Image (cartoon, rainbow, N blue to C red; front, side, top):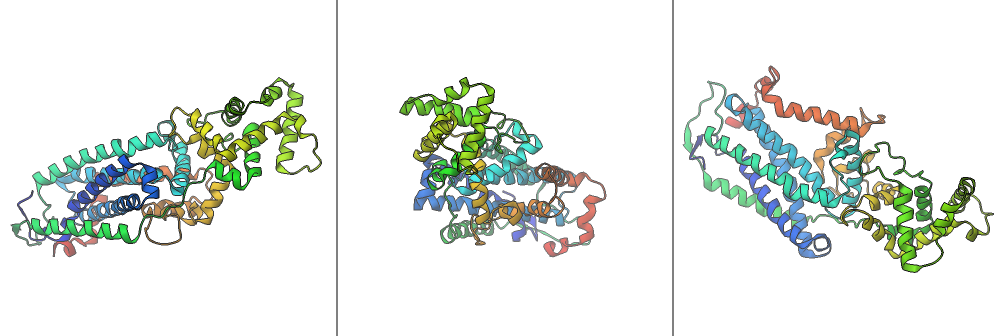
Length: 446
């Protein structure tokens, strides 16, 4: 540890890096417990809820403290000279912490997780990141969240600490600022760390992480079977939102009729038997197929009440069979079984999204983009505060990008430029002298 510091170095402003490390260790410890116990434990038990809440509040504190730490470094121009790399490493850790938090939201297993992963998928696909990241693949995001990003953060943290240990705490850039070297108050440093841990535990117990259970296909089928039937028709006729997704890249480059109709119906026949009506439909000529699809669409949409003899239309028989399969819960299991792993929710969540239920539920919980919903939890309360760090994106979406058809892509590009500006800030002439013009450093050095 650093033995001596400038006289102002024992102030809490210079404990922020240590407090961020304390949050990181809490996140690692609580996350490790959750990994071994699984989503059903942290969603349904009191002990699981506590660790889930502690993890949430530690993430909130981690990001807030990093921001404050960067702000102190910025205001005191502590990025000058040999310390430029220290700023770069800290900025990269901050950016990774934001990504880590969003991936964490995607792993919660509740409705917030379901909603946010669908929204983020649009962002990834609009920017081309969808070629590498499928936000609906729970297994992939799980690995990124608990292994990949934490390893990078820990590595950057090691280099960051090494530079601070070698260079010490930054001295004032102004010669008229007087100071003297004094022993570092390590006792105060650790006392602040223990106080932070105590506060996080109290917050986790007092304001637990809210839980709204995710929507399943079975839920929709049991409450509104006609809606499931209409959605199945959209997948059959390839007119659904998923079938016409603008960014036809993995994981959306699949045939909805094959995924949502053919494979599940084959499993239905294997389980319950009966005449293969889908094969009957496939054997028909194109004219009769088109007629049966139109008749079935009118039947399930309720636009033609005069339709009779529905048994003669094989499409209606197939859709009815799959709707009943959905009521039993077997349909969602069949969709998940089509993926390379059972933790890939691409097919199930996209189907639920096609029903419109997800959007309606998010609107009711005030979680849509128009409601700045991505910066709050899935309720109307202020505690826990949610992903408040996404407020700039929400502001852009509701102002300069409000009527932009490529809102996700353009918002991500603007965010990317801001990130680049943050990382390279010490190297940008004139701009890097902004803190000196502000003159707020004296309040910290006093």
